[in-house]
Image (cartoon, rainbow, N blue to C red; front, side, top):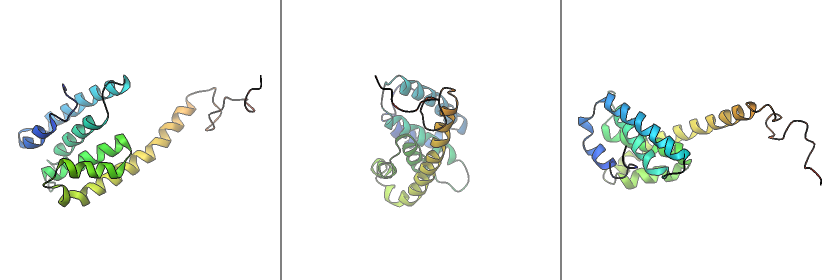
Length: 155
């Protein structure tokens, strides 16, 4: 939890076979809580912690049958990065740059993971925004105008 992720990411991927699923999930929970606390107080950036969380989640999912570790890590990195940044092409390119030996071969899998994550986060965003407007009784529906307002106030 000490660093943002760029220093710990290579050792996480290199020593992935030594991590259990429970330890990876615990890392994801603790790092996710620290990440959300840092984002809420504007301390640190969104990219490298998202890469680390995605890699940890992908490695945890690679314990499922049929998913190689490096493919799971690449898909997790791409999916988490696009969920945080909302930039699909950048997310695919980051995976290709970070995993140069396997990046080109894994690009189709990463593209699928990025598209699924992007569409899911895009579908969830309007629902969350709508729920936020409905929680304010002074707001009139989705327009964002205070109820009873007919336009801008004239001095």
